[in-house]
Image (cartoon, rainbow over all chains, first blue to last red):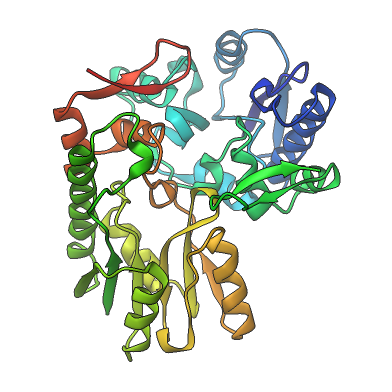
Amino acid sequence: MKAIIPFKKKNAKSRLSPLLSQSEREMLAECMLEDVIRALKGSVVDKYEVLTEGSLNEAINGAIHRTQEPMLVIMPDLPLIQPRHINEIVSANADVVIAPGKGGGTNALFLREPRRFKVDYCQASFLNHLGIARDAGMSVYIYDSFFVSTDMDEPEDLVELLIHGKGAAALYLREIGVALSTTSGRVGVKKR
Amino acid sequence: MKAIIPFKKKNAKSRLSPLLSQSEREMLAECMLEDVIRALKGSVVDKYEVLTEGSLNEAINGAIHRTQEPMLVIMPDLPLIQPRHINEIVSANADVVIAPGKGGGTNALFLREPRRFKVDYCQASFLNHLGIARDAGMSVYIYDSFFVSTDMDEPEDLVELLIHGKGAAALYLREIGVALSTTSGRVGVKKR
C-alpha cells in the first residue's frame, strides 16, 4: 500500500507571512513533511512518494491513475498526525475514506480503487470528494480526527501545533521563538 | 451518569456579530444547545443539567463538587457532536478525558471522580486541565475528534457547520440565508 504526499517548498505557507519569513516558512513546511513521513513510516503503509509537480489535482490524478493498488493521498502540513491515524484510515471498511480538514478541506483521502476516482482539491474539496464517490457508487467513511483535521495555514493554526505538537515542526517553531500568547484573553501566537 | 452544559443565551456568540444580529446569534446558540442535548439523549448519559449561572468556572466547579458520580462537562456550541462521541468519551479508560477544542480549548471534559478535580476554562484550558490532572495524579485520555473540536466562535467556523451539519443549528443557519461562499478561492460564509 502506497501513500503520496503533494509538497511545495518554494514560498510555502504564504498565509503565515505575517509571522514567519519565507525561509522560516519553507523550513517549517519541511519539518511538517518530516512529521507526516515519520507517521507513515510507523504505520502499515509500506511506501510513499513525495509529489513536487505543479498542479495539485493533475499531480495526484496522474499518480492515482498509474496505480493498481490502494492509495493514500495525504497532505504534507499535518504535523500532529500519528501512525495510529494512518492505520485507522487505511483499515476503514469503505471504498473511499475522507479525513476532513478545516474549512471544507480533505486532509487525507484513502482510495481502495484509485483508478475509479478523480480528485478535486479546489475549494470545498470535502464536498467535491463526497460527490465524486457518490456519483461513482463508492461507499465513503468519514474519518473523524481533530489532529488530522488540523492543517497549518494561518498563524492561529500554530496555536494547535504549539499546544499539541511533539514532532519536528513543533520543535522548529519553538526554536525560532514562536510561543503562545494569551495577553488578549484569547490564545494566539507571538514571535520573539 | 450526568452531564452539565454551561450555557449563556444573552448576547451569545458575540464574535459572530459581523455576520449575525443579536437575536440570530441567540437563536443559533439555542439551536446548538438543542443539538448537544439531542446527542446526550441518544447516548448512555442518563441525565443532564443546563447551567446558566454567571462565571463559567464557578458554575462548573460548584456542580462537580456537589456530585458523587462521574460527570461530563460539555460545551453548548458543538452542533456536530453525535451520541457515539459521548459514548466514547465516557467509556474511555482514564480518570479524566479531555476532548480538545480549537485554540487550546476544552470542549468536553469527563471526570470519573469530579470532586478530585477543579476546572479552569481560562485561556488555554486544555493545558490547564492537563496540568490539573497531572498534579492530582489522575490519568488522562485525550479524545481525538474533529467534530467535537469544532466549536462555533468565528464566522469561519460556520463553514464547518454548513458543510458537516445535519441538526437544528445547521438547519437554522440555512433558513436565515447563511451559505458557503467560495468566490475568493477560499471557502467562507455569506449571508443573503
